[in-house]
Image (cartoon, rainbow over all chains, first blue to last red; front, side, top):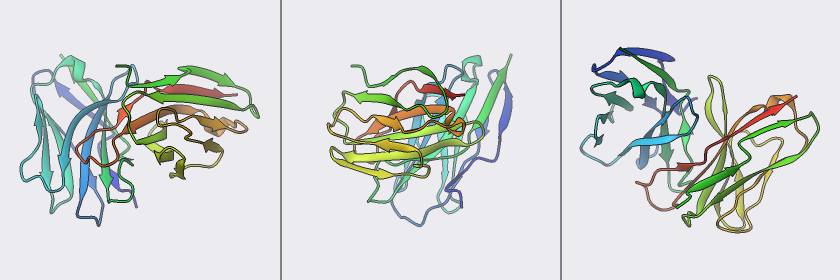
Length: 116
Length: 114
């Protein structure tokens, strides 16, 4: 079974609008971390935001926020006020457990296109 | 502060050739790993290391070898290249014992096996 599921291969949003990218995860561990990365067409992986399993509040980083619903095992990324430069592939990832700290499981990604 | 440095950025190999992808980090991270990225598949873990002298297999280790003789370096060796190994390869590093730390990625190596 996949540990990270991203069900939206592609998403489109108009500039200045908000968009939500979905991510669900599967783990039996109580301690885990969730990450979102952005990959523009140039190919590098850019860290966006982190949410820990014990964090009581949703993480926010500028225009990025993470809608963390622990009971549903979802960690959706919300981008507010989209910009043309937000067009990229977005990956959700999870780090779990104590024995393999550092190992990340990735979803298949969502290609976001922002249009003017 | 260079972060994670991967070389080369592009490589074309013939089937059966061997090569080494280099990865170096200057952040004193204990944990280093190699991923491959294929279209529609996300990033899949090939091998990882939790410190010098310690390596282990990830999801897709076949056809690849690694070693970790120093904290800084984590090379990935392709023993006998096959077209199925055509992919983009990423090296990443992070602290081992800090939950809030993100993984830092290299720029990637685009490998084509013909």
